[in-house]
Length: 378
Ligand SMILES: NC(=O)C1=CN([C@@H]2O[C@H](COP(=O)(O)OP(=O)(O)OC[C@H]3O[C@@H](n4cnc5c(N)ncnc54)[C@H](O)[C@@H]3O)[C@@H](O)[C@H]2O)C=CC1
Ligand SMILES: O=C(O)C(=O)Cc1ccc(O)cc1
Image (cartoon, rainbow, N blue to C red; front, side, top):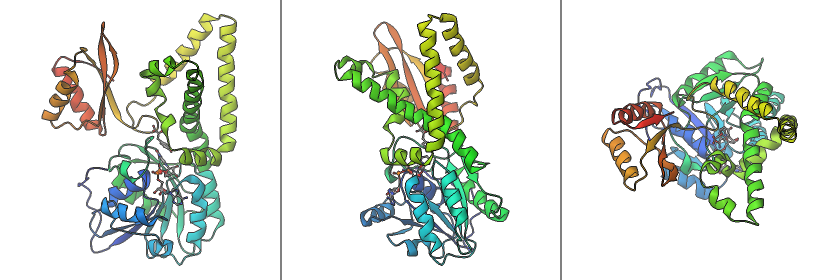
């Protein structure tokens, strides 16, 4: 939990607004932090657990908190549903039975969109409007303790209005979401699930499968685990994601995922056949085409799978180096989020990975370290 943005001024103490957040975890808490403390804004957090509501207030993420759904929703101008995907539809059902403020905008942050949008479309929401949402940034961490004001900054935030969504409600939600500093993208819910299935849900499944495969080998030889400390650990970071959150995402997007798994199996079969034929040129070609597509990906956009701004620095392998670089950055007031030696052998220089939550810190760190004659790579 961290920070404060201060340069938005369009909240107006004379026209107070009430924002309700159901499920104040990583994403709900991060959203709440973007609105908290603005003039005329009251944020109420909802949890089914009495101990959680005390924590939300004590941490200063919300103004008030309650275990009563009615109390949280009463008079709300905006309601954000930030619970696991498998719970979203029942929350929409419960809200549809309440006397909501006319014009109230209900949005969610679920990683899948088609099922909840279809469900809300079928219900009458007594004067309220549902607009599906998905902030496309996050991490493998969960819970309100992991929430951050900066989590969504510079990420894409997808909204999935339908043909019947009033454009003025979409505009109102977009204006509010400016406070996240995310970039709004509007698309259709079904298309969202196809794309996000391929670029986020499939990679999470692959990471989990890969870790479980290696865990199996490790049962008969523990050297697997010891040697996996470097690159393997990095590329499988997302396998540490919350099991319940991901159970719900994959089940909700199961039709898309079944097709993606079949396509993935085809890709693997293609590799197996190349190995069988000892087709070196074919293998190299797979790498060339992947490299060519990857080189065209937008650079440094914070989002899924790479939530931080990062650079790599070649460093001599000696004990004081971590402290030295951290001090140099600290003296320039550059906020470092994480620092890690990812390669350390006696005969070669190490590689240090520096992570920043904000692009500006990355840019300043890169310039500083280059000026100090470090080799810096992106
Ligand atoms: N983790 C990530 O990186 C991202 C997650 N999302 C979506 O955001 C939503 C929330 O995920 P996170 O914030 O990561 O999870 P989280 O575990 O940090 O927060 C979930 C919140 O929902 C509450 N909750 C859990 N089970 C509940 C239940 N059965 N009934 C009522 N409340 C319950 C928890 O107390 C917590 O406040 C999910 O729908 C997820 O798909 C969207 C973008 C990124
Ligand atoms: O940790 C990562 O890199 C992620 O990919 C986080 C993430 C998880 C779920 C989403 O719907 C969006 C982003």
